Length: 343
Image (cartoon, rainbow, N blue to C red):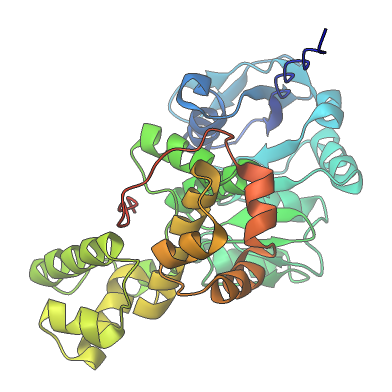
């Protein structure tokens, strides 16, 4: 009698610790809870185990009359796969010493730590950012530098990582970072699933500069035109696309198009195209069993070699290794062309 293969064991839920103490921002708590809290396994998302970790079980007050009830002690950080620190209402709020000690110990064990917005101040209090690169909201950069001069502030990033410590810029950048952490741990399709549930983009390109210097495109007409051009590009990623092609479609000169595209998105047209092609390749590697040359063609790289080079430089991995790590194991058929990816 042939041996029956053992069924695959379900993967253990990914354990996330939300660090709570008086003064944390309700919005950041909500973002963390919305990303890692709901059970979306019926839609193919990973299983998460999110807990609110604090020095004791006392309800944590937040602005607006809200409170957060901790459900795990700080010792639970030893079990966490990821530690997330919300921002602060008053950015100079001192974190309780036990919280700072727990963060130091978590980092020493190699646990990734992420701070949203002003949460970088908490990590800096713990000394975790000394000699490292970090970011916070653009309006807080001078304050941050004044109080933490040993930290190298990168003023125009949406989020950055240094030695397994992640920091993010302002409010919406916290969402960007959370989804990016999902993408790193579970793949682009998982991040896209959660982003669709939240009705937000799986990732944004660009930097804080687009919000400091150019809060909106110059005119509504430009915004509509550029959105239509991006939609066209997403539907034709498998075709050669140049800045001149996209500019002609927008009815602009290449120079004017590049300038207004960068003002609207915070990145150049070529960088944006590369981001979309990498995202398309990630989706095909996760959801299909197409051979590598066909994945490269449909994503617009032209050749497997070119795709491999871009994966190495942007994702620090190869397409084959990415597929091995994040394939859903349930290939789906794709149309001959490229399906657009919502951004």
